[in-house]
Image (tube, rainbow, N blue to C red; front, side, top):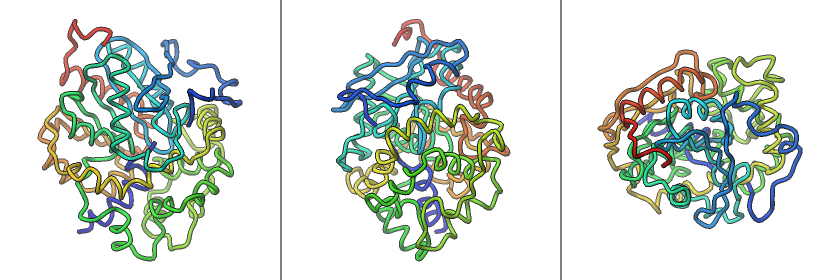
Length: 374
């Protein structure tokens, strides 16, 4: 089936699962000194804290009071990718919570690859909810964060009673572990998941110049890139190849982006220069283990109210089938496609995405007086 051959190539190359360090060693680096917290939040108070969960220290950004909404970022992102959603949700009466996921930003990045398993990422979320005193929370996931959110919605429906996925539709369980499926369906071609399996190789390439890695990745997957760039990169690049080799360097975002400023890219670059990409990459090395460890994921129905939002040019949507979502998500309320939008949905179309998220949450999960502060 073409969907099975293409979905893992994309869903994993840009977002099928992800994940720094804070706590034991306080973070340092010019990024934390140079840009005070809150400068992009336009007056809304963003509260930052370190929470102990599932054996790690997790950095969390929060805004607002009310029913809780967990915002889960993708690769290579940070809590900062939700900078537009935090104030919008707070203004709408919600408590918006955006963590740096395991391995990213100011959250711990354990050296043990197995620690990045889907099971551990799910335990991070439940531990975070416990630490914050949350009985339940709506989930909003983008890219790899969406994959984690889909699994959480399947396995813990009471804890997570509403679900919004950006870009990555419901990922059905593949018939083989993902690396085997990729090798079988696209032999002789470069693949990000396979490239990330080799310890040290991808880290050396991506860490050499974090700003260059980020701007090339963000441009290539955005609505500003030529429509054929991503298919050529992710489906037609022959082995051997580096991650960045097939991509153009577009220069500073001010030259090409209406949604990402130079200072915003600098914020990402400062953090990844400090941490490197190792923590983010390790998540990809657990995909095959996850397939064996949680075989029920990708087979269970999601009955909670669910919304799917995607850019029409998002690789995670263009190379996926929505059929599993339609079949296994009876709670699906709507599928929203944003014309001209690429992979970075909540950043490229912040206002539209905010409006859709707030409208959905108010209709699917009405505000209640006894939710305030929880």
